[in-house]
Amino acid sequence: MPFRLRPLILGIVAWLGLAAPVLAGEVRDWSQQDFQRAEQTGRRVMVIISSRWRPSSQDQEPVIWNLANDFIYADVLFLRVDFDRRKDALRDLRVNSDATIIVYKGAQERGRMTGSADELQLRQLLDSAR
Image 1 (cartoon, rainbow, N blue to C red):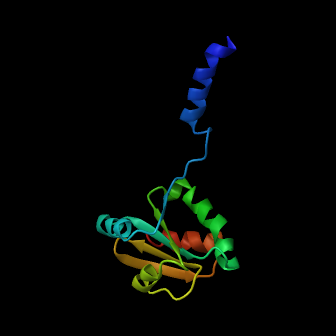
Image 2: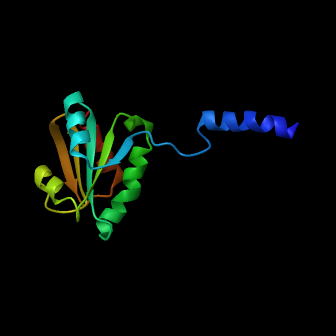
Image 3: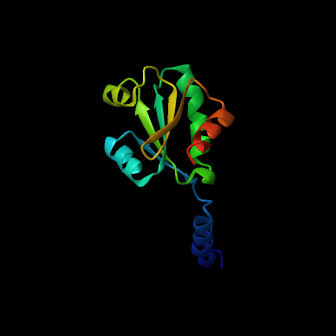
């Protein structure tokens, strides 16, 4: 009996999403093509400029993951930009410091914030792009 029920139980667990956490929003590394596609379709985008060695960027990371896991933001594309390696993207985005968050709705920038790891503030910033 247990052997026959195992595939059924595993199937139910997978269907319910209990087998592994699933992100609601889409999280990717920076790509100009992805950004332009989101601009053209009017999609909301949160651009996260960070460096792994800065405490302010490290403080933001769990907050960003909380947002990306929230189904309220399932339509949002989260694009990560490595501050130390993607100088081309920093120039295009007009960014001078790491731990900067920029929110877009399509091609229109709706706001930016630097250094904040306050989840409520970041939610408000993201909600401004509805």
